[in-house]
Image (cartoon, rainbow, N blue to C red; front, side):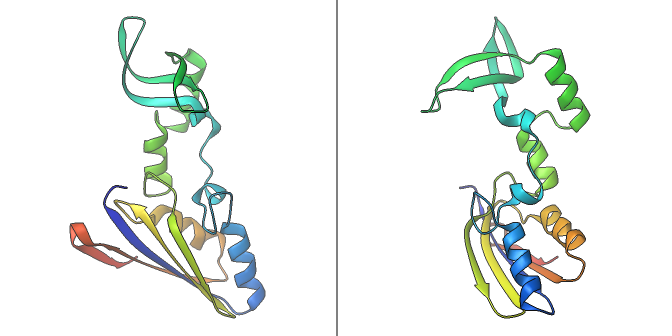
Length: 163
């Protein structure tokens, strides 16, 4: 993993049911805190890759690629006009850029631990490089009846704080 950012999101409600609902909504296939269930990555990015690659004797920055179950490329091609149009409408040519803008970091929460009390919960987790500020802001907008506080610590950069 990149520089690890340690995160703590504390959620306070009035009832046990509010906290139970919150925890069930933020959980997903990736674990008890899954950014993708709150802010899903657009499907267009499923087979879109970014970087630099040669296709048809031309270096491209973004391309469509199918991979086998071991992650090996089985088909790569330049993006077609419809894919370029869709990406332009979304505003980001790469999934990396989309995640950084919408989640605040390039990967989902990792090593998630939930401590549950009757009317509160504390979720600790790690992210690469930065805290997921846009994701936490989205939680605050969706759960107006809950008080949500967030703290991060990124020790290798010597920064941390509440947001």
